[in-house]
Image (cartoon, rainbow, N blue to C red; front, side, top):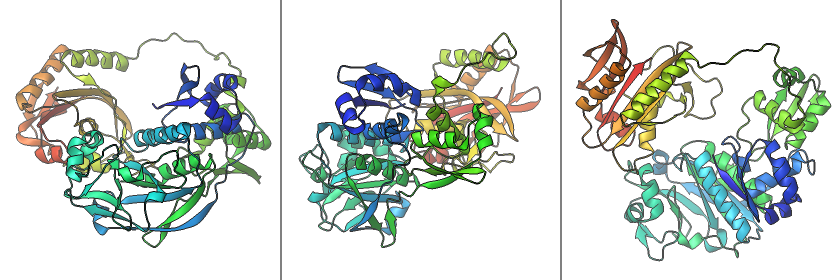
Length: 532
């Protein structure tokens, strides 16, 4: 989880809150203090609150939480007159785009550091290490609109950030530190994303690096913020950045994209909440006025309307998906320290669940075989579970009613695709890589326990994964047989089903080359998955 550095002097300028009050009260907002320094404090926030990944966001939240400034913070926008056009070819590479102009900024070393830290934290929390979303921040005075977002051949040259000599885009991916780190995101494409101004000056080579020309300094007053990506989350990231800069006095202006859409859009979403929902979840009875007070402390807009409360959710709060999220914030606004603990009506003696014991035993076996444990998300998508694995869509899949993104539309029913995803985001790491998970899948609305493992290296083969699978089952004293498999995720003739007590209990083998390619991998991959 991101650890945010807050300098006492900067935070006090933005919020009016002194060091001692900060240290005492900020844990009540649902975060952990990592360390306390002489001039700063390091705070760890949960991934669901990216709006708190900056000094500006924390100051805004604290002013509400401590009653200094309550209610929703409204951000006004004005048209900038700036336009950006998108190349048709870019739709196949990195199609989503959002942009904004911020004027009248007065930067110093603290505010520049906060902006850069926010940018990198959002790359991790929202952008999945820039793959899903990446953010570019540019000095607007050094470039001339209108701008173009295009797909360009790798031989195009420009001077990247922190370098003095021009390099081709291909050379940047091979030699620039950022290029080396994030090259895997673009390795499937013949052309790369590029943002240019009217004089063909380079603003950005997303999601890799900005141009040196648009570097932000303490003399910068006007900014162009551009966000590119693979999902609508680009708007979320843009809203968080521009609202943070507005807290320092910046004026937000919209940008027109392809002659139609204007971004950013900072209008709040409206949700409805009933009083009895709050009591049911928190366990305390509140009046509508008390609920509104708690919501306003958490920087929402709220008003009573008949037998319900209308809540205005700020555009930078990407984590509010359900009324439960609002009620959690009501609890925080009320004060967890005010809720009196009660002893339960019954008392029990705890012990390890049989499933936990089984998982622990399997972890010990897999670690002994040289595999590292990972913990992937259990939410995934049809594309990852079936299309990328060359498998037909299975029956009994559990779908998410209100998915946050196209990447989280179902609950997984197999583990192997998640393990391959982890390999795909670690292609820059040395080989061999061997990882496993003992976890849950859901099929036909029932939770099942599975063990999955994959390994990637140039010599990976069927014999190796058979030996691993055999060792696991023998350590568990399980008698088994193997049978010819028809699983299309594996290579024909190098795959087998695991049969226990006459029933199929798993599969193992060499992963099919098309699957390997779908996940952006370049070396042989072997794996198995076993029902527990």
